[in-house]
Amino acid sequence: MSPAPKKRPRQYWLLKTEPHTFSIDDLRCAPKQTTPWDGVRNYQARNILRDAMAVGDGVLIYHSCAKPLAIVGRAEVTSPSYPDPSQFDPQSPYFDGAATEQKPRWFARDITFKEAFTRPILRDLLAQMPECADLMLLRRGSRLSVQPVPDHAWGLILALSGG
Image 1 (cartoon, rainbow, N blue to C red):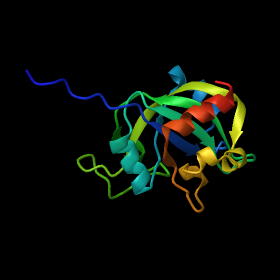
Image 2: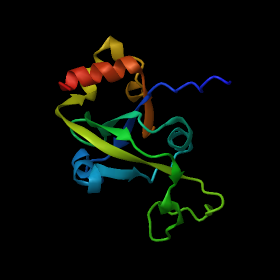
Image 3: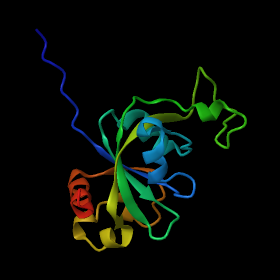
Image 4: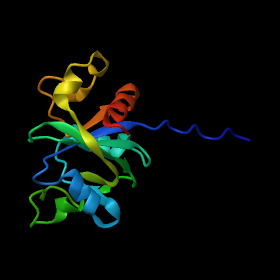
């Protein structure tokens, strides 16, 4: 009898969004509080969505291009990866003429709202905390829209949020 496959430990991610385009409130108000995380057009972020994330992983929602810059809530990954439908839609700003149904280039996953933080976690606060020094979010020039979050930072951020 072969041993049962090892269960992958839960991982954590930060997803950046511009609140004037899609905010934590938009996620909260989405049907079933679930939405596809689509429109990602960076290969490194695409690879994370496609290969590294898993159903059940935790997600922090970060409002970028906003004042203040802050982590505003959390969600959960609730679907396997699938081809991002917007790449095939000529009317979409995310259309990619090189993508085909047989060879999609871009992927999405569904995420489901868990909570909006009553106290957003300001980027400036995290930058002052030595425990968060390894957050990709705080690296100079880091613009990646899908980022890993270390376990210890996830716990700290939830504690700071009052959650």
